[in-house]
Image (cartoon, rainbow, N blue to C red; front, side, top):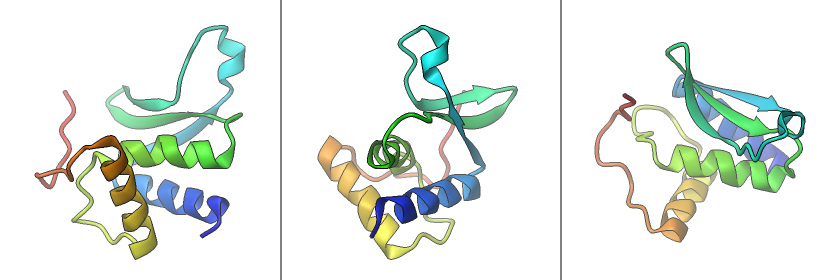
Length: 103
């Protein structure tokens, strides 16, 4: 699967999980900001450095989504396989519960 296609599918999965993906220019911050999940005004957002290559965007967003329980939404087999591969690479087991809690 092409990196661009996978990226679009990961973005769609994030939206299904009520996570807004926003590409931002981190270079203008003047800090060592990194891509990641945060909560802004009660909404989950994944802020992504727009200057990253697509492959690295996939890794950053995929690592976040791999920690989520995705059993309640349809996930294409290729995307599920990608997320499972990331879980294996990091040594994280699949989420046990159906919801990911944020406090």
